[in-house]
Amino acid sequence: MEAIARFIKVQLPNYLQNLPIPSSLSGFADLSARDTVAAVFPIAVISWLVGYSTYKFFQPKTIESSPTKEEVDSCINRCIDKSCKKVVHSMDIEDIGDKKVFCRCWRSQK
Image 1 (spheres, rainbow, N blue to C red):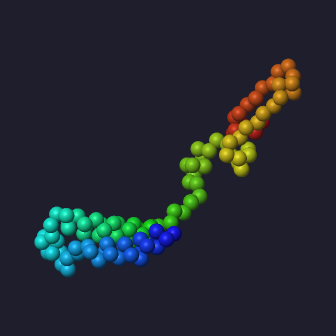
Image 2: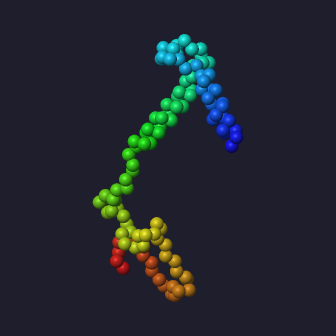
Image 3: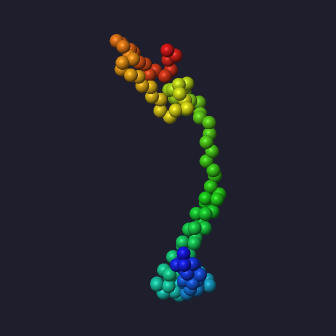
């Protein structure tokens, strides 16, 4: 915890104080290549953070809408175990007897 406090209270302010940030946009032309990289990287990171935060704040919330008529018509299982994500029925072989027919026709009422 002490290392984090030292970074925030001592090292970060010293770093920011030593950044060669020009007072105008034309001042970037006077900077050396090393100074330009040193100044542009923190500005780019801060700009990205502000832009992303603004985007997330103003991003419209997704609203789950009710299914359309086409989506409802394409649904096969309309009434059997709708609360389950996957419908599975199992039976013991001993209970079946001689012959048993299984139908998975969801739309039949049999």
